[in-house]
Image (cartoon, rainbow, N blue to C red; front, side, top):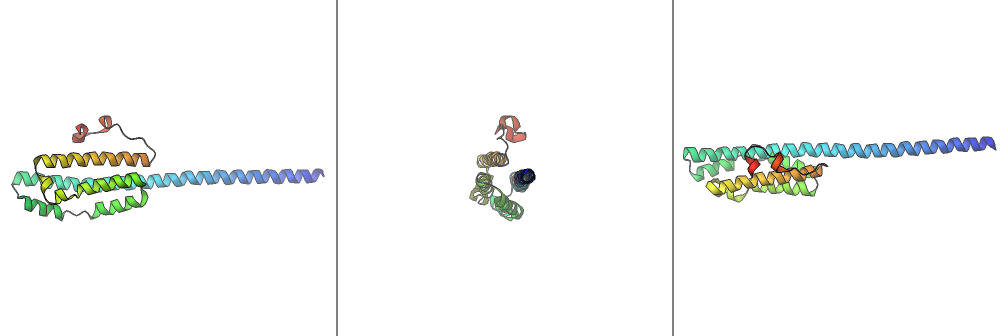
Length: 170
């Protein structure tokens, strides 16, 4: 009888050990999986922001040339329409595959603003409208960054402290 109790005790200890190991491994896998997803999201968010900003700087440069070289609105609009949005569009689609709802919708809003009808018709290239277009770009970018930060487990930024350059005052 004593040997049966000893065997049962050993068996119970083994079962508890296996169950503990299983639960630890499952928890570890879940954490690693969540971290891999957060890392993939961060990369997708940065890639999208980079591609979008590249497109933005090209528009700003075309607008500068439009003002300084006296190009017509039609010439500038034609050049804006020729800008390749392929890279940024691909980055947006990649982001949509990984992101949760809020950052995906904020990314879409930023993208829609950047490729909006006013710019494509040349309306947003002139004076005050261009400044409003530019300010909305920076605001949409901030909103996307805040959503991306929340999606990866970080708090939103205090933009009065975190902003740099021309967007600091926006």
